[in-house]
Structure formats: structure tokens, C-alpha cells
Image 1 (cartoon, rainbow, N blue to C red):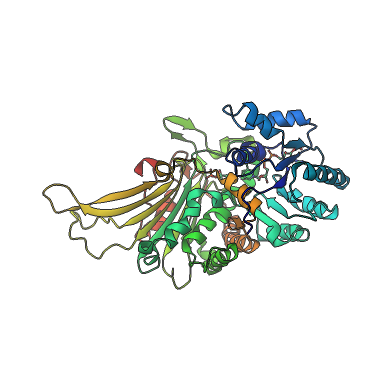
Image 2: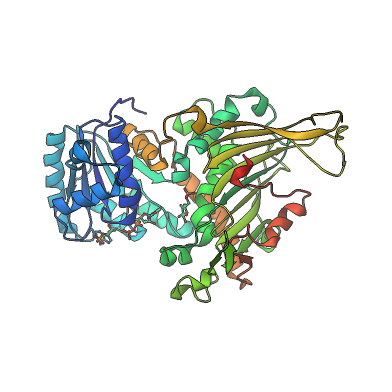
Length: 495
Ligand SMILES: NC(=O)C1=CN([C@@H]2O[C@H](COP(=O)(O)OP(=O)(O)OC[C@H]3O[C@@H](n4cnc5c(N)ncnc54)[C@H](OP(=O)(O)O)[C@@H]3O)[C@@H](O)[C@H]2O)C=CC1
Ligand SMILES: O=C1O[C@H](COP(=O)(O)O)[C@@H](O)[C@H](O)[C@H]1O
């Protein structure tokens, strides 16, 4: 990993007229600039087919920064942007791109460092990577990095094909596969909470932890991404990447140091230890759902199939819950429950670690009520950690009641938490691959979810099976009930 205070680079964004560039990439580069994480030695080349002028590109970049950003600083920022229209499948156009990059390189003193950010549909990844190599656009004097957006394949086979294509042009250590959850402050905090606190790490095993629950619920529906989402579904969209990445961070052994390779190697061991579920038993471990009409905050909501014409009769899952078992020495017998879905009651990502309860609580009014200690890691929208303990109820009784010790990140750190994309772009510029997915992680995750999806593809689901605005289908509750557990509430007011 390099230790550059202010990295210098040319950033080439393929798909610069698109939604991701506008909503995430330009604002993130701006924040890096504004916060002094990058200096003046950078330029951005935007590529799309639209015949925009540089001026129109500047207007779009400026607009993407929001109403609060204007004036000299915004002008200085957008002056680093250049639009270069061409169709990426036209091999002859890459020569001109090379000339532009060479010119900008000397103007902006970027020392030959190049980031190629593929913010485009995956079918173009191989073509672009090959053309970059063929036309010698990979740097000869500095470093070259290829940033790849999701989805990385549709299943293991297609992911492998895609990987073969890009690795014929770029080495694995030049490929940065984005999983934006790995850029979230509290996801990055999982390792620190675990490995910097004796009280947790000593208890972090199957003797003291009863189960782990990871919820990533969204209140939004598919919005305008119906075309993409209906081919994907919640398992490919969220489980194969974000949810399994969180599982690995929670379950991995302490790495011998914080080098990306060491951390990755521990994460990979967890993915290798995931229980291979026999297809006929998938229903005991995984539940799928799709939302029907419902209500949220008094507002009526349409069901998934009514959200767009092409979704009629769709059997794509908008919800998944699962029980993941990690068959290794530390975790044998401890279920990691995950759930994620669209149009659920709240937008919230939260991890609850439920510790084994004491055999008998002498201070509990009703012995049937359990109040085990919980460690809650709030990932979003609130960021922080809450520890649930039991303490004496105030007053004359000697009963106990749950209390909570809460740390809220925003309250302590007055600076705004960097957005995931901002953090990841900066990591890429300094060559830190820790928060990007290695091919070994991607391939093992696909193999895991492929079994579930294969099983589901053989049986028509009974959809819709949960109401928009609810917390998902009843079967997801049964997954835990059968093991003597329940989902801990995730409402944001709780913390
Ligand atoms: N949007 C989001 O929030 C997220 C997106 N992603 C992923 O990021 C990628 C981009 O998504 P998004 O921005 O939403 O997509 P959009 O459809 O909004 O943008 C696609 C971009 O690709 C360009 N493009 C398409 N075909 C060509 C071509 N033949 N030659 C040159 N440029 C071309 C378009 O430019 P033009 O029309 O000018 O040709 C446009 O800039 C996808 O892989 C998506 O899955 C991942 C996570 C979130
Ligand atoms: O990758 C994706 O993530 C978002 C959820 O991200 P978050 O940061 O808002 O939790 C999800 O809406 C989208 O479908 C998926 O592609």
C-alpha cells in the first residue's frame, strides 16, 4: 500500500453521463477535493456516447454537487473535467483517448497514474479492459487500476467468464471490485470493535454467542431500476455481495496484521467454511419473498408487480432471509441470520450479536422472558454501537431491567462521515485494496448463492407473500423460532 498524502491520478470514467457518475462519483471526487484529500494534480475524463461539449459536461458535474456548492471552488473543481464522447465498442476510438490522456498527464502532473472506472453495464467490462490493453492505455510510467462496478456476473459461471476477460488485460492486484458496503464507516468499524476490545474478542465464539443477526432493510421499492432488479433479485443484488461481506467481517479470525492480503485471506477462510446446504434442504435455511400492496406511514403502496408493466407476474424475490452456518471451530452451531429486502418498514442496516443468556436470572419477574446481552452495531442511518445489559430496576424491587450503553458516531465525531464511494475512491488512489472484493471472495460467494437460486428456480414461488411496509414474510420469523430465537427489533428510534 502506498503512503501518498495527496494522490495524483487521471480518473477515466466510462459511463460519465450515467446515474452512478452523477449521484455518487462526481460528488465523492468533489468531497475529496474539498477536504484536501486530493490536490490540484488530478483530471477526470468522462466517457459516454452522448455528444456533449465540455461545457455541458461541466454543467452536469456542477449540478451533481448540489445547490450548496457554487462559486470559485466549484468552478476550479469542474475545470479538471474533460468529456470525450465515443462508443466503447469502437476499438479505433481508443487511440484518441490515449492522446488525450497523454496530454492531460503532463498538464496535471499525474505521474502516469491512471484509474479506469467502469460505471457501465457489465457486458462492456471485457471489451473496455481489452481495448485499454491493446491500445497501450495502461500506464507505462505510473500505476493503472481498473475499478469495476456491480453486478459482477449473474452466477458463478458468468462471473468467471467476466473475470477471465478482465484478467487477460489487468492483473488481479490492479482490479478494484467495488462493494460499497465495505466503504461504510461502521462496516469498517466491525474489525476495530472486535479486535481492539478484549471484552468482545474473548467472547467472540460459539461458547458465548448464541446467534448473530444482520438486517439490511430498505423502505424504497425498485424505483426506476426495474429492468436491472427484476433480472437480479435480492439474493444477487444484496446477499452475494454486501450481506456475505458483513458475515465474513464478523466471523473471520484476527488477521496477523492489517495488510489487505492478510485480512482477505481470513475472510476467504470463512467463505470456504460456509455450510454447503443440500439443495433439498434449502427451505430449512432460506426464505424468499416479494412485496404485495401495503401501507407505510399511512400512505398506500403498490405491490412489486404493479410498479412497472414489465414486472407483472414476476417471480423475482425482493426479500431474502437466511440462516448461514459456518462450520469451523469457532462458529460451529452458531446461526448467522441475515435478512434484506425492499419496501420494508424502515431503511436500516444493523447487526445484532446475541450473547448466550445466563442459566437463571434471579432478578427477572417472569422467568420465561429472556433479556440476553446484545451488542448492536448500527451501520445506517444511525452510526454507532449499543450494548444491552441488565441492571436493577430503580426503586424498592430487586428486579432487573435491560439498559443500554450507546455510542453514537455523529455525536462524537463532529466531522461528517465520508460517503462510502468517497472512501473507496480514495482507497483506490492510494492503492489500498482492503475494502474491495478479491476474485476468490466473489467466486466463493457466487457458489454459495448459486445453490439457493438453483433450488428456487425449480419451484414457482407463492408471491406476493409480504405486504409493503411490513418486515417481510412470516416464514422468516419461523427460521429463528425453530431455533428458539427471534429477530431483535431494528427500528431506528430504538438506539
Ligand atoms: N446507479 C446506481 O446507483 C448504481 C449503479 N451500479 C452499476 O453501475 C453501472 C452504471 O450504472 P448507471 O450509472 O446506473 O447506468 P446508466 O444507465 O445511468 O448509465 C450508463 C452509462 O453507460 C454509457 N454507455 C452505455 N453504452 C455505451 C457505449 N456503447 N459506449 C459508451 N458509453 C456507453 C451511457 O452513456 P450514453 O448514454 O451517453 O452512451 C451512460 O453514461 C452499472 O453496472 C450498474 O449496475 C451499481 C450500484 C449502484
Ligand atoms: O448495491 C445495492 O445497494 C443498495 C442499498 O445500499 P445502501 O447503501 O442504501 O444500503 C440497494 O438499494 C441496491 O438495490 C443495491 O444494488
